[in-house]
Length: 518
Image 1 (cartoon, helix red, strand yellow):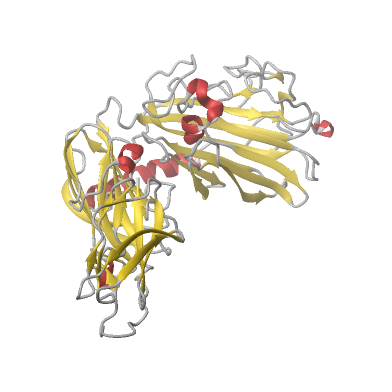
Image 2 (cartoon, one colour):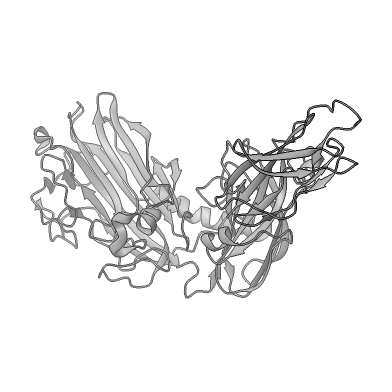
């Protein structure tokens, strides 16, 4: 069959490359579709009715209800199809139903193969198949999951087709967290009619490093959902400690698990016109491609729509690479990630090894200034860089914008901002002071365990000022005859976060908010 997803992907590769080469440098030009493919239409030859195991590279060593059968006259399905149900289920993986694999695997440079032949590692994997319910009426309990996999149950994405009263619900699961426990998020992305055939497509782009793979799900030729892969589950979750790395993808796993729906024996879903493709050189691997990932942090943590008030923050960039030329342009860090499933994160186009790239936040607009005194909602604390997101997060911010030259590996940039929500509160002086008291360091950012030296102005003349943190007095200083003081060196808290220091004399109370970053 003529694949809508495969055709659309080729067109997107051309249009996105042109966009990247001209101005929109944060859209990755999808790789040319070099070819490691595997297709199955279940026709004879080579398929014969019966158990799918061993036919044309397919495997199914468990006693599951998956077999080559008649297509029952479904248009565009030919004479035979794969029929599968969850009449028999188990919690196992390796003995379930696996499609004929591609010769080459797709994944990141550090993706592991688990003993399966990798071939030439690709950066893109896509799969498309047609799905049709065997019956027009609901099949209670019918549920089958489909996952891009390397061949042993090491799933890198997931769709589940669940027959409910109003139709076939399609659930998508991805691993969005980057902590030490899996943060799987399930989304109900579509409800399909049982009376028609539906075309389902996975499009997966693997990008070196954590938290940046892009997975798109297409249904009937239209983009239904965009998410990420399961790479962070394998990178960070203790369950994966024995093999703490993402997996290559070569096949599709059709899995029957959970509660068995025994009434679906011999029924279920028909699958046909399966196409899979691994394409593109692995990013950051032997082809010399490099990328720069830019993330926004606010008050020490990755920005969210809440902490960033759903604002878009302009960034200016310039670049010079053999594959996309030399130019400059602008983009925004916003709730919609740029070539990334993560909000307030952007990833550049692939640039040839040896490229140069620079980036800086635009502080001339309404959202960010050099400091909170400008009256804007955020101030620029600085930038950090590293060869991984963790390394960038651990570095000390500098106000010098990052500028890379002769890039031979991926780089990560964090743009650190502070929310100017606490401008300090003052109580008018009772006597002898016409001005409000203030603390110069209000709104400042300091590294965990670093040093603070507060300077107070216009407090009570020759008065003691008590400094409190968390309700406890931690130091007392004496204001001079002009109402001014300096605390000298104080050690900042060791734990990142936002802290409020209270400065109080007989007639003034000032709150200075300090952000402690890693």
